Length: 353
Image 1 (cartoon, helix red, strand yellow):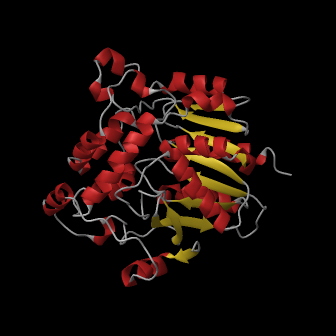
Image 2 (image 1 turned 180 degrees about the horizontal axis):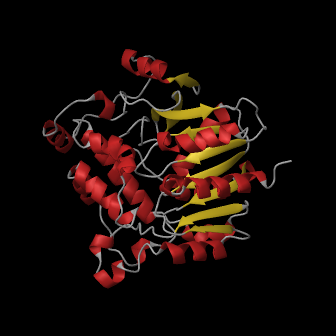
Image 3 (image 1 turned 90 degrees about the vertical axis):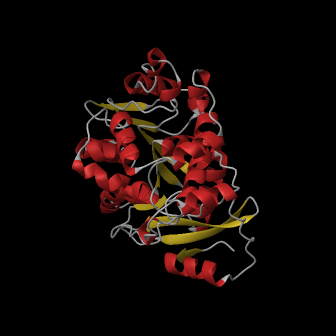
């Protein structure tokens, strides 16, 4: 069965055990030991963020993928005065759909319907232990969600990891994408050509060691080029809170597997194949890159050079438009709202009747 449900009904379905859902996998001993070492079971920070309130009503789409029945949370906001167009927002690795709230409000005010899913493995969506994470699988899941909603064409906006997914979605389904917007996407360089491979188990061990302070420090260094502001705290609260919850091992395991997906599945080489009108919005102080800590300082210094990466990507994508935002890091939609919003709306409305 594929149908959107309110979050409460989706959780009731899971609790009562209705349907022929696959039996859950037993908790591995390593997960159990890690969970036992955690502290507060604050429901805001469990694996599903069940006690966390999103800024818009959360719905749940049930789908079957890789032999499992899964629940995919999503936001679906409709405008008071629709213009007949739909925008799909794809979140980054360290975030969920909720951080798109200002963009959702902006676009619905302009007449767009906005759909923003939490991908499987993220946010309020299921965290399956044995899922084979690929960008193709996430794109197929997203397509299934849109099909269930009767949406045939979308403008796709992806940030960070969501930029990689947005690119893969557009490559797989070019007939369904009217525009593509990439906001500081990762994957504009192929890290595995210079960075040693790190196994899923190694990523998992690293994720288990994460603390609120380490998350803050990583984002401060990589996303904001060393500058941290108090308003950024709300953006790390879910991930920081989950490090203290007994469910953290489940979240850490999915995170480790998605790190492997990002590292091993570049979309860089296929950028010239994109056919949709494309906008790149690039904060120039961004230095995000996987594996900087695993290479020599002189190599690390060359990774995550977004001023160069943005130009290279714009040159590779046919007809792409590049908006460079100085003194801004990985989060233009947070750090430079006015510039980001103007660029996004102008691009989407350039082809509006």
